[in-house]
Image 1: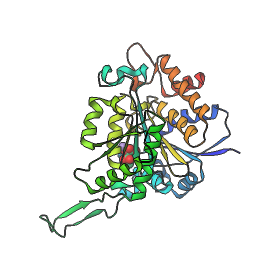
Image 2: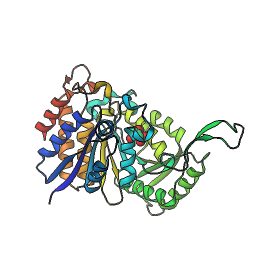
Image 3: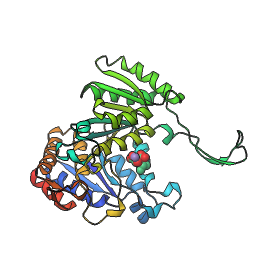
Image 4: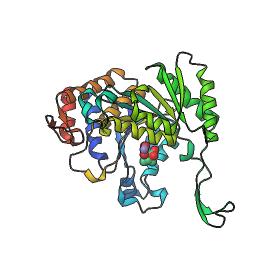
Length: 357
Ligand code: IPM
Ligand code: MN
């Protein structure tokens, strides 16, 4: 029986990095059926919607989704519901992808890529676990209106709602503890409990869930302090679990600690093991189509897909070893290039990974 994989390249550099990732997946000789569909601005251009019904249906049918990137400035003037970003938000919600795993790893070969001193950051290997289908991203009500009360009554105002249901917090907390059990057994829950009710509720529930995991050392940190500690002493962390908005911000910060956002994959999982896998970087329309993009984050996302949705650990490890081999051989795309290494294009990087498999 073959596994259906939905391949959604998207915009900007999406198609060129996806091409390399699908070459790698295909070369493994596993029973995979790859089916491609448009998403984001590319889908809007073709069908007038960033997440056309056919694309959503394919994603729902598939065992896993491999996603490139969406977004381009040329869509900034569209109404919000037609902007490319709605495609990824819609997929997360429709597939119930509540658990977003964003590892931040500093590869020894790229030790100089970080803006932090090597003695602070070398060997960094942390996991940010971001809740992905709740919080202020999806809370209702939201909108713009005329204020009905308060000091600015009668003026226009914008508003969003931060909220978390008990089930949403418990299930992401469990994933956090389980991830910590498989790693360094340390979990840091990040919130803003000194100000926000949502966060106080979050913290109380995480403490309850902790009773099921006595071996894990649990700590709590306010998000402003966490942002500071991530640049002060990032290796103090093992797994960080946090809500949707804080996780969005902290995961970009953590990614940059490695100096190479073009290297970082991510996985978004639902309760039935179905997942969406995407590079942590965006669509970079400024360098699209020039062979400058780094395909490794997407290739490593394909490895995560094999590991988490298809249970193909050996194949996942094979891809990861091949990536480390090409880095050790000194091959670098423009984003991670430094003097003394060998600069290659997007396609040449794909060739090298294929050769190393
Ligand atoms: C991310 C992105 C998205 C988010 C955008 C594109 C909607 O920044 O995946 O981190 O905010 O979640
Ligand atoms: Mn983000």
